[in-house]
Image (cartoon, rainbow, N blue to C red):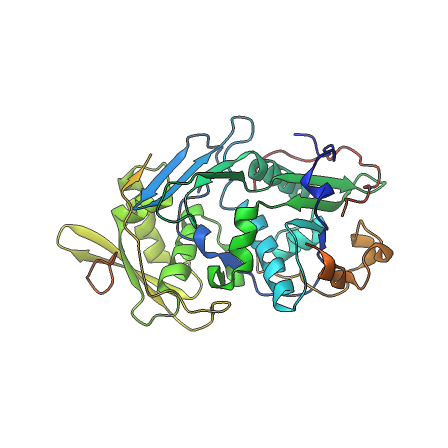
Length: 359
């Protein structure tokens, strides 16, 4: 994957950029992504498709052989982008699907280091996010209307004169952008989420935040059903072992896990331990649909709306009037019962070098 792309007929040539400055903001996640199997839970390259169906909801995810499917660690890029958009929208600023920022802002915002290896991992993550193909009926009503997209439709890493990555431009798909600017489809998450190291642990936290939320009685799932919802390639028995280990180690910030039995069924109960995680606008929806039928790294920091160190920005302050103000013109079981502008020319870009393995 080349780090530089031709701008002819690109979306960036038709969208005004949302220029991200810096500042501490609360991370937000998109609700549709929090419980369904949109990402690989393994750091090993995955090309086996995810095929998921629950009622009228379908999710299909395909990874390309060259890069493999986007992972749940790669999804940190999307969480960070969503957080920036929500914060700007809350302040009355106009946002865009075209985001412009520095690698430093993103990496520190999701608790990563900023060494050469980390920049290389970011490049690999962007490649996987672009090459992964998603088709879904979510937010398309009862009829099977296949909307297909990639998590990132375009990306470019620009380098400074010394060859160090200095700026990133990405375009996220319309499906994701609309799901972010709709406040009812976004939830705040605990910054400690970024410290979770296991793929299943990360997925479980997102399920817990989406379903259990702040409800005193929490939420209960059949473990076999969780396996279907996860899209994991593990055998059901191995997946159940991982869930039991999670219940023993209690890794989820703000939630407690316990294993229960209901006859021959093995259940996982998720209970909130405090009220530290708040939805952006609404409480967790009380209408719960969680039955699937088929299935074929420290706390968040910088991001947001304050002036960033000039040496960390690819674009001079004169190109960002009033910083982000320039964007004003841019474009189960519950208690035992089942419920169902044109892109300005980048500085000359040296080839981006760094390891190609995933985060």
